[in-house]
Image (cartoon, rainbow, N blue to C red; front, side, top):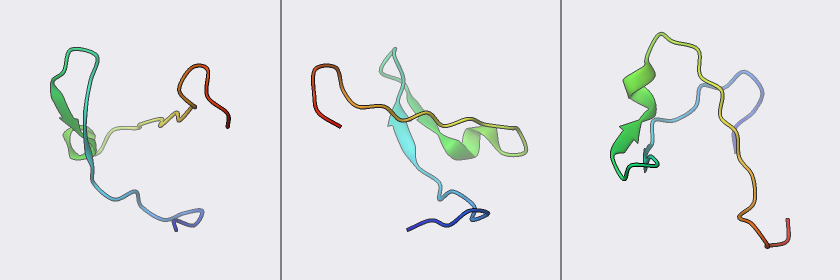
Length: 43
């Protein structure tokens, strides 16, 4: 579990165009991560 102030681990996900994007692609830039539940699901 991450704590406030911890660095996020590197990860890779697909973007809206199905291209792989890694957190490390944005090294030394400010990044906002926004997580939300999938539509029509609880939580």
